[in-house]
Image (cartoon, rainbow, N blue to C red; front, side, top):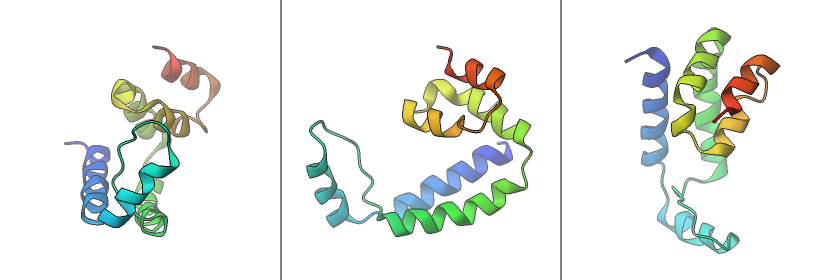
Length: 98
């Protein structure tokens, strides 16, 4: 398993462990369509994000871009758009291609 996949696995595990059923149940009322919620409160997500961002900050941009492009078909469209926001135009067009 490459380092990027290892970090993502840890993030998913920590998010899963931080689930709050009350938050999960109340979140759906904000959307008309059914959305899959984990029930993690925003401050907790921010804390987890900051912790793992520090680990990813030492990774090369090339490694991150390659990971995103390799896994773009499995990523929700919104996540993909956030992931490619700072990419150079040529890589961004590759990432957005279907």
